[in-house]
Length: 281
Length: 261
Ligand SMILES: Nc1ncnc2c1ncn2[C@@H]1O[C@H](COP(=O)(O)OP(=O)(O)OP(=O)(O)O)[C@@H](O)[C@H]1O
Ligand SMILES: [Mg+2]
Image 1 (spheres, rainbow over the protein chains, first blue to last red):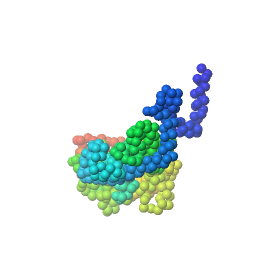
Image 2: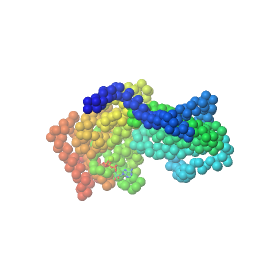
Image 3: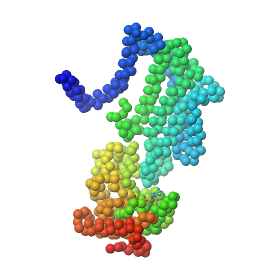
Image 4: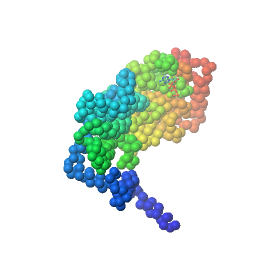
């Protein structure tokens, strides 16, 4: 009885501010890591104990040593760079096109009536369906891959920007009008800051789709890239290599997403959710 | 002098929100506009602010027609309408983009001090209470030194204590530069505390029904007998304005500055 009573008392003491905030900052990611780490350790242990040969599902140590080997030979860096370049180029193109067309559609009603039905119809087509056409038009090399990624990135950005502009609070725009802001000043001082939070969200969604589509693009024939590592691992029966590529995808995807979040943070500090004490970090 | 000459507004959907509204408002006068819901008070204010154009008639400030937002005319809405991405200080300085940074800083600091929020200069709008946010909105409107300040039910979303506090506060601020105030309110108490003149409107179509000069000395004692009597008179006029059968004295008002009682 005394034991069970003691424990919570101690833990509340250790949670007392100001260490409480620090404590929480470290425990939250740690809590998130608990499940995958436990699973990894358990699997490692199961294979070591001989309960499984680990051939189809290699233990973490094998995956890590595969990553290590690939890194030492310089291959890993080459594949990563290629995939990153493709995602980067496709993302940049998709963001540029989505932002421009989304802004035009959001701002001018006539443009929206002209453009939006067509774009919405195109959106209904599964993007992978474009692959054969892109290959015919752009060849099987980089261009068709970048185009496919750009298509995937384009739609969330377009919808995000248009929706954000359409939902800017009229009441706040009126404040700008009473202070007689010129057109450009209205865009810079009211529209852009009002649209930014939704824009950042659509950038992150777009980037996620970019990573999804780069795999599809690299499946359609590539001699380099993380997607190639996947296919190569499948054809040569190297599950460790597949898992290594998947782990790298996860790390790159999370890192690039995090970079967008970091870059946007100074501009979104005014939002409740981005307050440092309650942020995602 | 702010002159409204037979101002009318018909919305595109055919609603006749305001009809033949005429009055003259002296510089520094405080006019309270009261009337039932939907009688065109906001329509009137938005037309003076230049946010919506009147369909008929003319609104002039010192002879200059007001058809678009004017630098000498400010407006405060029922909601504070602060820009959530700007700090309190930057919100107040929002309309001062054409003065030097140093002057802007000084004027914003002075305005913050006047509304008693110096310690909130760096806060975000979301961190303010309703009353504090509305103070910031008042400071933002006054810092550009308007000649005419329009207020559309500025305190109606606040609790009774905060409302009184801000009414007194508004009077303090007004006494410094004495701009013209046109205040729409549902609160007869508020109208009698603040106004030199109360304009009662009636609906369908929205028009001027009666107006009354309030000559009580300032500061006004909310508990005095004279205050109560004045309030009762306004309430009676308000009741009559809502009575469909009551005759419409507006026509007489147009011919001269006739006042009742
Ligand atoms: N944008 C608009 N389009 C069409 N009709 C409108 C519009 N704004 C107001 N109206 C109509 O005009 C009339 C007057 O509206 P207004 O907002 O001026 O009334 P109000 O006196 O401010 O009322 P309240 O006291 O409820 O704020 C109402 O019948 C309203 O329905
Ligand atoms: Mg109104």
